[in-house]
Length: 402
Image 1 (cartoon, one colour):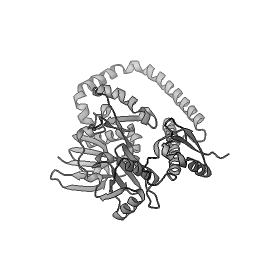
Image 2 (image 1 turned 45 degrees about the horizontal axis):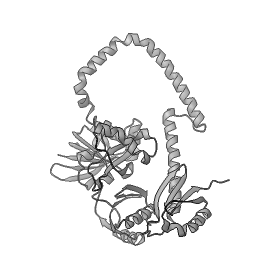
Image 3 (image 1 turned 30 degrees about the horizontal axis):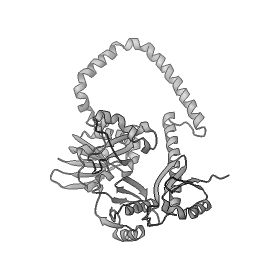
């Protein structure tokens, strides 16, 4: 059975979310029935046909959590999952989806993928056009051979470890990014001595191994060459589990019901004219209110498209700025921690409303004064709050210009 893999980028998913088909071609990998593999890049209409379609999302598209799930039916689990992941949701909970991955760890925990619903809506539309018999949606990190695993692709990279996936951007200077330094220190503290690394040359692996204090072993791996994902590993679960076949095949069992519904619509058309006029007036009133609300919220933004779409983009821009502030604060903190933090000075991080809170172990208290002075000198508001176990909570925010 032939297997077609497609790499779905964020730009393509956004275009499909807005109702447009992406014009840019897809990276694909075709595993033919005889076992031969062919890789290439083609537009949607030129992609080869296959019985199984595997849509591969970027690693950053989904957060992988390890949770204790109750032993209940799928219908009940669908209702309780939003409560179990609410502490890990970034953004609007209504736009967040959780999928349960197969397998249970020795500690009884299961992996749950948390991602934006737009990825799945876009993948579902693509699957309908391809009309494959079997559709599986996964992320690059879910195809990784084992954890921990580091994959580098151009200027982006991600680390798959026991607690999930850490995506980050590479440093232009060629040094290990601060996020990777912190992750390597945590792995070191957990007695992890080496990490398999794909996409990084042997010389860079050796240099980073010295800088991180953990061995990076170069391996040959690419998402298009990974073993096929299991059917129950697909992110298309619950309400996304159906409707991935072609539109004609999906509607065929309902043709009689559709015919009766169409007949009923024709019979009631005359009586609905008056109601149609009333609803049209109401629609104009709602559109006027939406425009007024948009101008009140964003007076400096010209209304060149639908108010809801523009408002969503403005909110996304505001969210992106918040992420930039998080990266600025966490990078400043990481620069002050020891490069090989085997004692685990940093225990937890949390970010909310422009404020970064870092829980430091008691072993890190002696260097707290120096960290506070350095952070204040760098233009940050930094303070410390004592904790019950003898540690300190470092509170860090960007100092606003007066």
